[in-house]
Image (cartoon, rainbow, N blue to C red; front, side):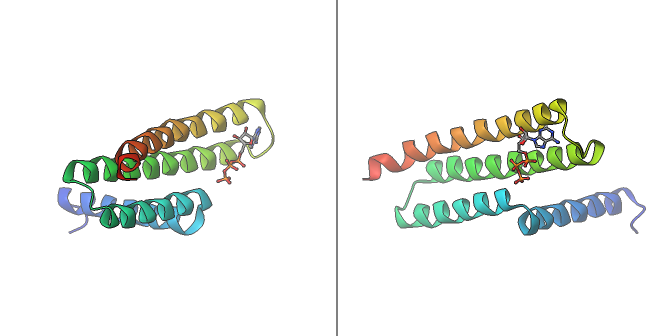
Length: 119
Ligand SMILES: Nc1ncnc2c1ncn2[C@@H]1O[C@H](COP(=O)(O)OP(=O)(O)OP(=O)(O)O)[C@@H](O)[C@H]1O
């Protein structure tokens, strides 16, 4: 069953879910972002945001969690291929963190657009 096309796709989905749990269990940065996502979801219900606002908020949370997860993967690869200090490893980690910064900045701007008018 697992060797069929569908079986292989299901197995791939299983690895992805395992990866998501590993991120949530082991990565402090993902845990912080996930907590922020939960707080913003509670705020969304409290302020009764519109369907469009929900879509942007959910996209923002997903974007930040995804880039944060990819950043963690880049850090793992960097530490695996070169555990010692190296300027290039530092540059790779800084660039990966920069990607998270863009996502987080986008989420903050969207959050301000949604919630500032509600005060
Ligand atoms: N092996 C290394 N060589 C050179 N610079 C490094 C190295 N490891 C880390 N750095 C520098 O330290 C910064 C922080 O790296 P680190 O691996 O501690 O990530 P982090 O942001 O603290 O994430 P986490 O807490 O999830 O590990 C990097 O962005 C980089 O500038």
